Image (cartoon, rainbow, N blue to C red; front, top):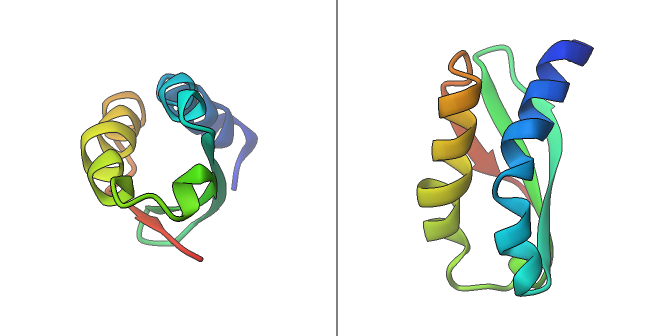
Length: 78
């Protein structure tokens, strides 16, 4: 993954991280696939949170696609 792309993704995730941190959670970048899917891993309280799928769609995926439009999808992996 190129450093510029990773930096832009981290900036996008930084916009939602404060909201995750309130509940003891976080998210980390794992990989970007050849078809431009961002793979993330939930951390802390987000691992077992029932709201993680909604947070993914309404928060993380929205923020990433707004700031890094070449990312086509986001998926969480274990």
